[in-house]
Image 1 (cartoon, helix red, strand yellow):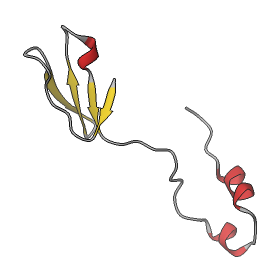
Image 2 (cartoon, rainbow, N blue to C red; image 1 turned 30 degrees about the horizontal axis):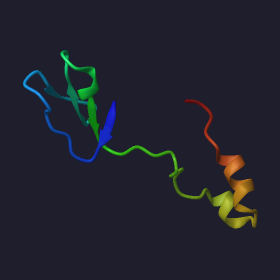
Image 3 (cartoon, one colour; image 1 turned 90 degrees about the vertical axis):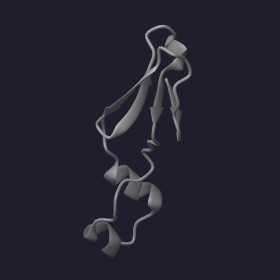
Image 4 (spheres, rainbow, N blue to C red; image 1 turned 180 degrees about the vertical axis):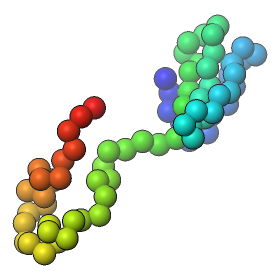
Length: 71
């Protein structure tokens, strides 16, 4: 699946579907035409918690403490 900022139908069989706030292009005739509109990143973890902002710790230590498991 291609992730793009703008998606478009590539052939006559492509159809546009909106699910969970994202626009998808699905094509039963050619699976290479599958596309999703949007941008996903795991870089943003949210604002600093009050405990971490008051204590002077290194960035790497903070990342280890706030890392979310899963995926």
